[in-house]
Every structure is written in C-alpha cells, then in structure tokens.
Length: 357
Image (cartoon, rainbow, N blue to C red; front, side, top):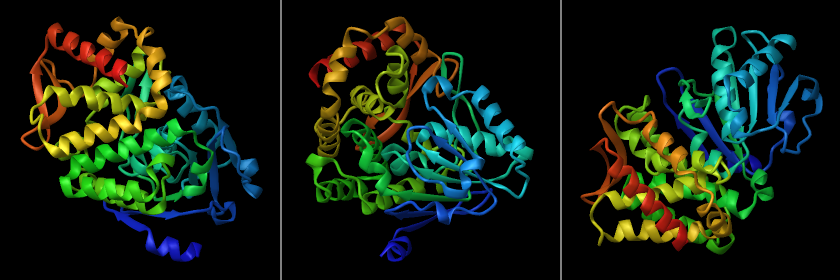
C-alpha cells in the first residue's frame, strides 16, 4: 500500500538549480534514509532514527532560535561529524527547521545536498516546496535568506496525528490562501477536498497535500525568485508578521496569516464577490480553534511593535507599502503611499476582526 501511495502522490518541481520530487505517503521509516546522511530534527519529534542517532543534532525549535547563530551550530555539527561535499543533510521538522536547514546546507562547503521531511501541516501544505530560507535578525522577522531547494521532500501524514487543532488549522489556512491565489477553480476544488476530509475534525490527508502543493508548484515554476506572480502568496503575511511580532510570537504563524488575510482583503474591493466571501467565511471557520488565544491577545498587542514591524516589512518599497489584496475578482499586489493613517486603519481593522472571531 505504501508503495502505491508513493507512486500516486508524486510531484516534480522544476527550478533553475535542480528539479526535485515531492512524495506524499503515510509512515516514516528511518531505514529509508540515505547512508551518508546527517540529521537535524526538532526536539519535539519522537521517532527512532536507529543507526543515525550518532549523526543527529536535536534542535529545540523557537522563533528566537531561527538565527545565524543556530545555522553556525548546524555547520559546526556537520564539520565535527565529518560531513563532506558528498554528504546529505536530512531535516525533520516544521518550517523553522526547514529555514535553518536550507541556509546551512547552502553554506556548508559551498553547498551540499539536503532532503526535507516536514512534520507540520504548514510545512507539508505550503513551505516545503519553493526552496526559500528566511532567518531572523534581531527583532526583524525573515530579514535574510536565500533560495536553495532540497534534493527531495517526503511528506508523511502520520506526523500530523500528534498536532493540535490549532496547528492543523494553521496549515489549512495557508493551503486555503495558496488555492485562493491560484484561481477560483482551484479554490473550489480545495473546499471540496477539505469537506471530504471531515471539516469538523480538520484532518489533512495525502490528497489535500498533493492538490495544494500542485497549486503552489505553478507559482514557483512561473516565478521562482519571487518577483511577480509568486508575490501573491504573500497575501496575509504583511499584517500577519506584524501581528506575530506585536504578540511576541504567541500567535502561531498560520493563525496570524489567517487574521492578516481578513485584514488585507478589506483594503480591496469586490465586497459582493462570491469567491471573496467564501474565502472569508472559511478562514473564519478555520480560526475557531484559536478563538481563546486570539481573545487573550487583544489586550496584549503592542502597537509600537506592530507599527515598527509593519513599516519595516521587506516587501515594501522606499516610498510605498506593498500589500496583496482582492480587486477585480482576483488577488493583486497594490502600492499605497506610506503614511501613518494607513497603519492606523489597518490596526483598527485588525482589532475589530480579533474581537469578532
């Protein structure tokens, strides 16, 4: 059965540096790891790595630890364990582990092969493909990074069985954003796939992962280096990243992006669009598991930090805020001349939406 699933759910992603495959299956088995491998793994993941234990670095994941200092620790680990240019780095974990592995593998001996085994719904449904790394510097989120795709990605849905409803919702929200950005047909298919996996339990199955990654693959291949169409996938992230910073990262990334989408969509038009309204209603539904957390954070949001994070977002130009919103029946990147009135309006809408969740 496992072999059949691997053949059925196999996706090839084309990039300028190399083409790589994504396999979607159920159960992870350490015996399938390449022999000349070195592993970095999230400390919260409980799996047996058998003979690879001596070549494994366990990392306690946190937003504060997604730094160059941690990359240096990974690089030193590889050197101390005797990794060569022919070695492969295996990354097992969520998006933070992925970011650290991407940058570290690209720098060690000017670049070694690496493979990614995502363990969160957000990583499986979104970040695992695309090859981007994003590392924090001081208080600036995702300020530096590069493009260095993995040689292979293997998604095992059994990893998802230990996730909370909030963590599952975080990934599904990112998936909704990707499919909504692609086109109305893709978004309708996403909604049908989500319903077929039992919406109330918010399950994520192999088919949902495969169809969502197929949608994201289009953006990656037409705009690998994030200059045009792929920028639409930043929908919700300008406000979402600022919200994360303003709450000291107490709100999970996918949840913050969902809130960001609801805020940013209000900057556009087409208020009577069925596609727009379906998206809003489904995001609100997906945010329900996080309701208590969001209500608590309303009183704790630091406006000064929100302001600073919003203004310093790397997507903005020197003179304009660059935000994705919904206009003329599709997502579009718009530019708004920088002024404090816009930030105040965005923040007021943010608070209003948080109160309404």
